[in-house]
Image (cartoon, rainbow, N blue to C red; front, side, top):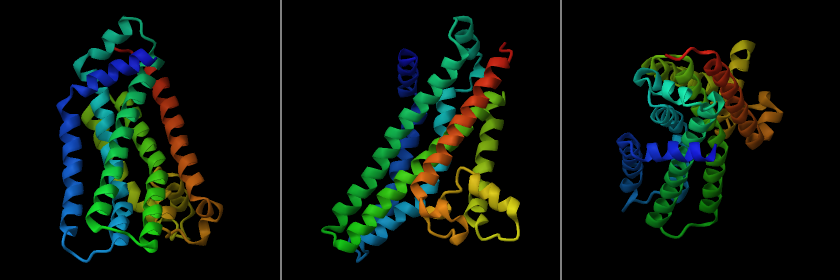
Length: 253
């Protein structure tokens, strides 16, 4: 398995899309950070920006999944791996693990780079700013498993839907419409179904990260980190189990 993951990472390192996407992410960060120079913007507000933009990661995750899967149905390369005798479970989990590892490195570098540059530009920070910094780091820590859930869901779609474009469209539309629904679901007291869908959607925990859930979430709101990690890992395990089941039963030509 480790050799397979290493091989997938090697292939990923030679994809221009990975570097173009990472470069665009850095540029977007600079658009937020550079205007802070020479202003009286407080560090607390700069750190808050990071928390606000964390859901953007849900739109980056599908791109990484697509880069690793590399439209193997369309290119016919998956058949070669199966014929070679590589177990389908290893193919699925190996590619998913490669996407997770690469994405984790990029995400950690993006968050650390933003916080580091913001702190450097804004100079010494006070006690209130340190509290805001700690809150931003905590928010990023809580958002990470949600990103994993989104990535795993997209990878499942890429395996289940033979059209890579169709799979990506479903993934993006699910996030586009599901995320705002999840953010307001806790306020929809007259719609239990919407509330449950929002609570268990992979973006649902942003309700508690942003502190707008209210008392209705009870235990989940009081244990935001646990909620984020349990739900995110549930999406990873559930999507992976379904994905491997689909791949095992699929006739690959």
